[in-house]
Length: 251
Ligand code: NAP
Image 1 (cartoon, rainbow, N blue to C red):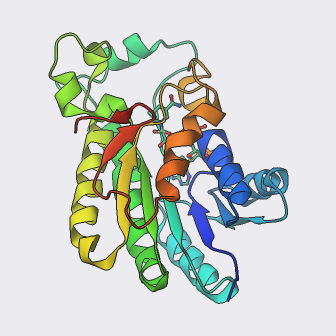
Image 2 (cartoon, helix red, strand yellow):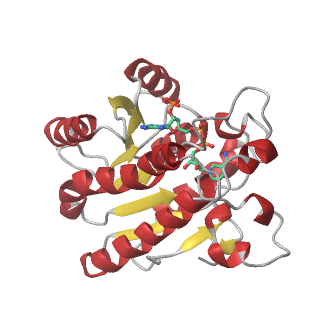
Image 3 (tube, rainbow, N blue to C red):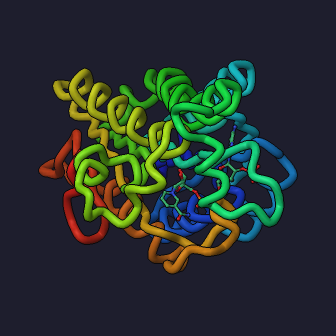
């Protein structure tokens, strides 16, 4: 069995996930860089360093998920931290299309159900599927942690407030997928409460990544801070919370 604690970060070939992988290595973890494209994962793992290795993992592909769990058991024999970071914001935003234009075409009244299903498949069902597959390993770890990378735009409480700046783009696709992810987080935390496995959701903040065409205002180092803090929670740390670097976010 691997001597160091092991972390799996989904969608770690770029963006915030890649930075989370780097930070967890710096905190003494052996890190599995999840990537749906193995070559890109290998390039990212090389960038992280010798304590990282790539693992092919498409969170929407059951075979890929099962194979990844088998490989972790056979090659490393343990899993201490799962960071469910992989997500997509849409499948239909054409080059040059603004967020406002896209959100206009994806209102509850006119959204394509295919678009809705595609985004929920990755951002919600993918998280549940990966977590289910990894739970047997996580249950064997002395102090496992699950971190779901969500978004403040999924907060129902914030969006119900007319003064919330992102309210006008609250819609059924990406924002609602993060609301659903928050619900899954709380459900997982409640089920696992007695096991000591802590499950928390966080928002990295508006971070400069491919997800938003690099329009974000935070660096990936800043974006990775809260997920990494939650991955490293000690025995007295919370479970079933939603937070960013400023503290608790209302559900
Ligand atoms: P990103 O740079 O686009 O990274 C997303 C990652 O998810 C990529 O590695 C992508 O892989 C991967 N991914 C997408 N679909 C996948 C699938 N089916 N299976 C496996 N991996 C898949 O975006 P990011 O900003 O770093 O996003 C990381 C997390 O932060 C997401 O959960 C996002 O919702 C959340 N977040 C971001 C912001 C922000 O402002 N950036 C704000 C709030 C929350 P490919 O490279 O193959 O596409």
